[in-house]
Structure formats: structure tokens, C-alpha cells
Image 1: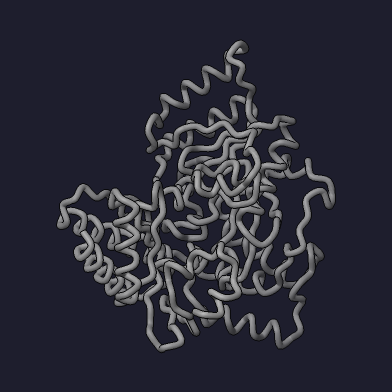
Image 2 (image 1 turned 30 degrees about the horizontal axis):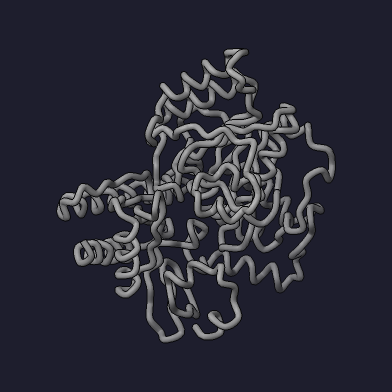
Length: 414
């Protein structure tokens, strides 16, 4: 690790939690330069839904490179982008009756959120946006203003304004009563509260602690947004692309968002890609070149992302995700009951969280997991929740082994 400690910025974080030098990776495992294999229940913070070095994606990318495919194209038209657009529409949009435009925003999720904020303010002419407690939406200033974590916000160095913070459904003071109160304030011309440009919400707050919203509460948020003329924006960056057992975490809820923010898993292989799905009448407010970015035409990401979409040609993978999610939840529930320390389990599909109630304890468990060959990261308030996001394609033996390692680590540290 000497080169990293000597030359890399102090801002690095994951390498401190996982202090080894990784040399190769395949499926749900990474191998360090000493040859030690680690089960990966961190999966690039939710990027690697299809594991490390998926063979089909790797082959497609190699063929693309060997054919001198267009690796970088800004937003010019290429064959690979067309293939991705058509495959995404056929696989994801058309079966759901979604008539949207795909806006490629830049390499990562925060770029998608920034574009959504800019569009909402442009459409409505309003500056303020509603965000929710414990939410995480990115590290650039607009997205960071929506993010609730004080540690991240403090690094901005400037005021993070134009955001109205409302309790998430599962947070203190949350629920539909809080939304009813906000509705009354927005309806009162003497409240001093102007209607917002957008409501930005996660169906499952991944970094916020694996907090799961109900369909009823989300519909109430949507209804309030529509009633006050605001855009309803769903941030699917970490929990979309099949993580919950369907392509979108909001599938079947009847939400019909105005904007859906996607990143992480849509690139398939782990290469950068971020995209917003925007209702056509809203997208029409953009003028050409009004929102740009150097890395909007990632050829390798389009190639791998198109292959990733073939996993959704039938329900085979998603049915396995739902079954494995139930298995993960059951194992964590049994562990929590066995330890008997008031731990809480929450999640859906293959994003599951174990709230151990204390950030120091969660950090110690994560460190014990690393020593035993498992990568898992804390999240939530004070880092008190152990978040499990293994690749969706993990085999059953690796899943069982990882859950056993986690259970042993919890028992030792608790």
C-alpha cells in the first residue's frame, strides 16, 4: 500500500476500509496480489450488479475494441449508442408502456441528479426542491444540497441552499402526516413557503441506511408533487437495474415518475454511464447543448450495457434475485434474533441492511469481515448499518459462505 499512501490524496476512503491491493476479479470475488480471495458483498457500491468481468460483456467489449469501435463520441450518433437505445426501449420501456426520452448526462450518478434539478427548475421557474432526511444523491453541489449527511455536506465550503428537507417515511416525524402538513403549508398563501420545483426521492435509501418506503407513501409524495405543479423525480441510481428483483424498484407501484435517474448498474461491466429518463413534454424544455458533458458517449459502456439488458429478456435472473433476497433477509433475521441486541433487518431483494445500532460496532464488524475474506460496508446514520449488495449473479455457495462469514463476525464483535 506504500505507493497509495505516498502519492494518492488523503480523500481516499474505501482503500482504508479494505487495506490490500487487489489484482484480479471474477464473478463475486476479488483476489489481492498475495492471492487471497475476497467475497464481494460491496460490489462497487452497487455498480457491479452482474459481477466482476462478466464473460459475455467482456467478449463483446473485446470485439468492439478489436473492430476499432468508437470509444468516445460526446453525444454524436454511433452504432453502439443506437444499439443501446433500441435494446433499452425494447427491454425496459415498451413492456412498461413508458414513453420517455433518454438523456445521457455524464459518467456518474450525481451528474444525472444535477441534470434533473436543472431541468425541474427550468420547467417550473422555481428555485427550491424538496428532499428527504437520510437521502443521498451525490457529491456535486446541487446533489449534495439534497444529501442529508452532515459529514459530506460540511466539505462543500459554501451554503447548500434551495432545498426543503422533509422527513422520509421511516424517519422521525415521517409518514403521510408530515406530507399532509407540508401540503397545508404550500396551500396557505401566508405560510411564507413557495411551491417547489421538484420532489426528489429514493424508493430505498441505500446510503441512508437501507430505509424502505412503502408504495402508499410514495404515491402520496407523487400526488403532492403533481398537485403543486412540481416534478416527481425518482433516484434509482443504486437500487435500480434489477437490484430489488425487478428492473425498477418502483415497478408495480403505479408511480409514473417525471424523471428517473439511473447510473451504477446500467453500464453493466463497471464502466461509467449515467442516464435520465424524462417525460417528452418536459424534455422539450431543453435547448440543444444546454446541458453537456465530455463523457456522455461511452462506447464501452453502451456495448456492455446492452449485453447487461439481455439478463432481462426473461424473468430467470429476477426470480433468482427475489429468492436470494428472501434468503439474505431470513439469514439476517435469524442472526439478529440469535444475537439478541435489538438489531433491525430491512431491505428488499438483494439490498439488505443489518442495523446494529452503533457506528463503531458496525465498523468493527466490517473490519472483522475483511479479515475473514468478505467485503461489506457500513452506511446510514453514524455508519450503523451493514449494507449487503452482492452481485445479482452470485452463485448460491458464495452467497451462503458470505452470510456465514458475516454472522461469525457479528457474533465475535457483539
